[in-house]
Length: 183
View 1 (cartoon, helix red, strand yellow):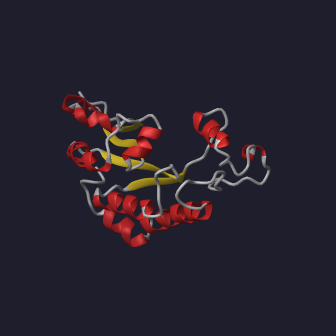
View 2 (cartoon, rainbow, N blue to C red):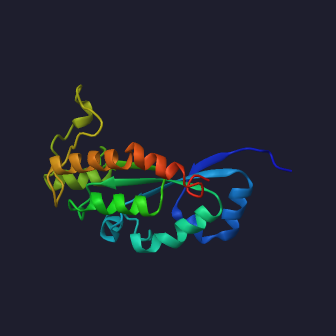
């Protein structure tokens, strides 16, 4: 008998490689998977030591399998990795619209102290403020490093524009009416 419980979780897209697992998740009431795609660029995924992750071209069948089980995807992306150029924002938006994600999280990379990323950016002289987290007036979304292939301002504005474009009222309504995307 069903417990009539609805639930969601954060998980790797690799779950879609296991049809039995997806079936069990859907039967048990899973309605949402939060998936950190992080980047659509394989070079960036390799930098993150996520080389086993797929590239943008490989995601489509996995996304379809998840949606075919009536499970909604909450997609998360990070901008500012070393292989990101200004076109990454439009490419990621197009990807999100094409796959009809209802919820998407667009964020900028943030070098947290104690991480390999922070250490690497410090060694490369790319940190704007080595102790940004101690600043009383620090605001989420501020760029605390110098990206390789764009300026900090381009990174911040590109991310903000992607959020605004994705969350336009007309787009929200269109996605909301896609019942397969909405589980």
